[in-house]
Length: 438
Image 1 (cartoon, rainbow, N blue to C red):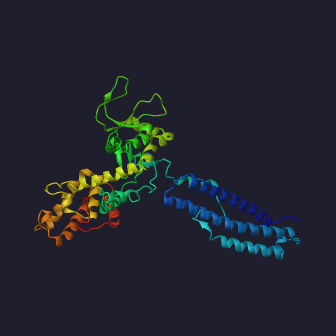
Image 2 (image 1 turned 120 degrees about the horizontal axis):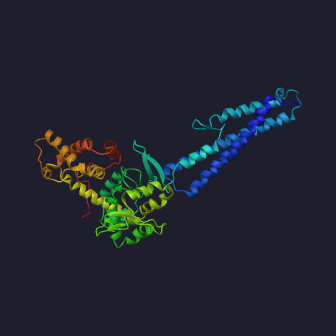
Image 3 (image 1 turned 60 degrees about the horizontal axis):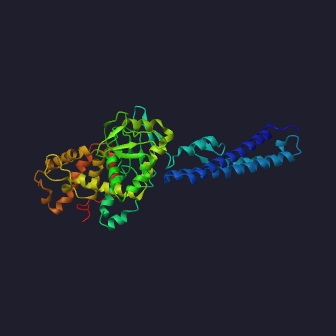
């Protein structure tokens, strides 16, 4: 008995549905393996879990389709009609299949992956495109086609989640208000284990985004030197950086064989490739080139900083350095005035605004705060130039107006958005809400 076109179509669709189940299973296995073997940011883990859930729903819908098509095929096989499609039993199974198809239309994943198609290779690529927390990857930067490697900020190692806060506060090394300011401001910077090398600097590390400049110097080598020279943390430096080829020294020229000649002041980061027994210390442009042109070595060149940023010892170092930067920023004197910035603003919110600009554009802080004061005193010429002479019942309004002037006039990268983020952190605007340790 000849096979009708509808019967052939059903047989072909049944095979496709069975393949769809296999493809969905393959992607689910890929997701499960990735979730076990990799560390992800919570949002990325949620993406993978959502994809897995979607595929589970597609599998369930496809399984219903397979059963309906198998029932239809059985009806075809058992029919004695010359025209099997006229058989009432076949018609009933076709109707049941149509009902399943209608129900399956509500089971979708976006607009491209429905129950009618599961592209395993496409979805495998999507899974792999969700970067884990421990694999450096290339990112584009700027308009000139530049870029370089970075580790994803997974927000698993933030100032807010730092486990040493209670001890620092208990030991009077920090106060709760300082914590509030630093945690809020860090939302504009990086995680404590942040590492990237895609812009003009050789490498940028940590919550304060300290850098190594094209000469191999900068705030990061200074911070690393202090960490290395502290007897309590020297072993951590040696384990995380020293054993991986990194050192901090000073170059005052070159020896006859071309190797760096060292002086006595430590301010330059060097890398000596531990995989090359003949390697010489490199820094500056030479180190930058080594990092950028050896993608397979990114775990070796950037990985040590990632690992260092996850140690409790270096995290404490970052917190204490952040606090020193906060005090230093508030101790700056506005251009043309005789009192420190901290005399004019004493709230958590005000301190965070000043620290935020000082980390981003330190050279602008005194000038921009001066402009904010100029605008304030132009509007209130009767107010004393000495903030200590302000009446307490006036200080709230005075500080708010000065901070509004300052927030709107700060120069730097994305200052308006950075200021908004600080507002969203719920910092206190009350004068004297920022308290330093006794």
